[in-house]
Amino acid sequence: MTYDERFMAAFEGFSAAHGQTQISNERRAGKQKAKSYIVRKPLTLDLIRGHLDGRNGVGSIPINESNKCKFGALDIDQYPLDLEAIDAKLQKMGVPCVVCSSKSGGAHIFFFFTEFMSAGEFRDKASEISSYLGYGGCEIFPKQEQVLVERGDVGNFINLPYFDHEQSLRYAIKADGQPASLEEFLDLVDDRLVKPDVFVGLTFGDPIDEFKDWAPCLNCMFGQGIPEGTRNTVMFAAAVGCKKEQPERWKARLEEINNKFCTPSPLPASEIVTIQQQHEKKEYGFPCDQEPLKSYCNKALCRTKKYGIGSSSMSIDATGLCVVKSEPPVWFCDVAGGRVELTTDDLQTPQRFQKACMEQIHKMPPLMKMADWQAIVGMMMEDMSEIEVPEELTYKGQFMDLLESFCDGRVQAQSAEELTLGKPFTDEDGFTYFKIEALIKHLRNNKFDSYGRGQIQERLKELNDGAANGHKRFPTTKGDLKQMRVWWVPAFNQEIDVPKISVKGDEVPF
Image (cartoon, rainbow, N blue to C red):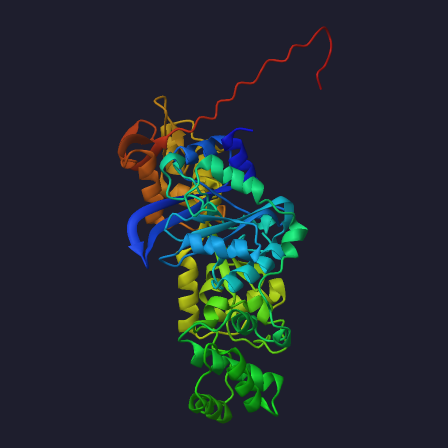
């Protein structure tokens, strides 16, 4: 295969759509602002060539129509990043993957498989890898375990590496820490292909058996070592675990953990006593949003642990927002591993969002305060994907269809004087004239009330270069010429060439 064919095969995903991103020069939080949208056309070899040649960047949607993936990725948006150190740690962990620089200067860690695997199984293992790596909570692609294809959903895409490959900043890291050329990247992909069952069975690090039922972040840090300057936060979280595990002797258990796992030196006894006094006065939960716990967090796994956060966690695990640009728009969101279809009102209102989750995925997320919910939705909308739709699914497309049926329908004026009867009239110059009140009546009779009079007028002006109305001298009665205010648009072409049917002898064709 040629290099572009090999590249396309590596990023095989959703067959009927692909992604594109328009990048602006504006930056936010260290990241270039961009508008992402999904085109409902396959990712073709010509598009891949244009991407590699630097003409038009594209993205691939990892999850396919069967809810499986042949590649996946971790998207780490922290700056600055030591890509060489990340790659070295992953190789030491025995994780087969390729680390690439992303367009915004972060990291895309790609995983490639010999065959398609369950998107849910991939996401579970990818969450373990990201949390052990110290980047828990980073974005995982595919972002969802399922796509609601029958409802117009296509999932989220990830931008591909090697845009303008000869001078690309989205390159892979070789084992020696140097940037890889396109051909070297493709060789890395071949070398690090892995069977799905092997990937799912990966184990890494040294998890401590006595903490197997604890929150994964604590187990991981106890095994790797508690980062310097974080002992107080970690021991505070450990006290929560101790009270869950040994409520009768949790103080002694906390002291044991402090002496054994806080290296090179344990937290002073006075500070341990302070933590104990805090937990005596009040029942605390894990400080999941504080570092270093946040970087080692794996919420999905933690919920399954006996001494983890449990199902009573008050956070909402909502990601992967997409909007289908129909009118009205349709939204899709991933919630706790399920895919939910939403209206704008559902997304805007916490109670309606909760109800949609209960009805569609049979899960009841906690009811958030309006201010907190608005913050969550706002963050999701910053990274959402827009899914393009055919024009007939927009108000404009529906209006155009009805306008055409009005102008070319059965009730046509045979002469201009019939305009007063509400009929459209087409002249020899190729223009169709009508009273706007008659058009509005036709729209309302067909249950189209999405446009008011002003919007209807603007649409008509667009069809005739801004001048689609005025006074015309038409006869209102036979022999009587008066000024009549009418609108006009170029006539719709409805002429169809019907081939002649040749009939031999007395043969009847029907």
